[in-house]
Image 1 (cartoon, helix red, strand yellow):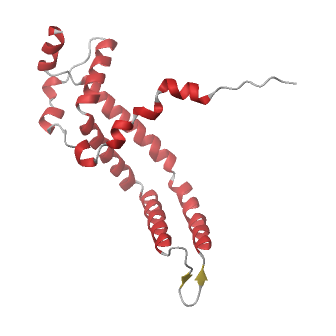
Image 2: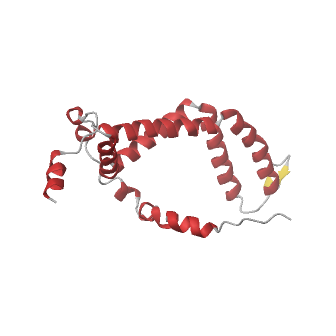
Length: 177
């Protein structure tokens, strides 16, 4: 008889603090989230671009810039998401089809759809939606789009954060401490 090895999941998740890590982001409204957008002249200031001297300096820059430009990076992610959807028309069509169908089926409030020549229950409508949307979803390849989005966001955001030097004001405030 083999011995069972159990890992209590709450021990692992409590150390990572997954429950509270994104609490601040969820409690913010969209207007307050994007209220601290930095101007493009500051976000794209080429005079502050430089190669970090060491990996430690790159880490410091990334830590600082991820918090300082967080709203700008959110906008970059949203723009890359829109670009991903507009370059994958079938994926965009599938998402619109699912959202519109779910909205339409929800508007029926459990009643049957009666078109005069055919009558369909909500379970039949959901089944038809699955039979159409799932194969379209596999053909549209959302996993490839998601992986591209993660890679493009990571390279552009982390690249910007690593190569953008801190403002001079922040360098003086760190030395004074």
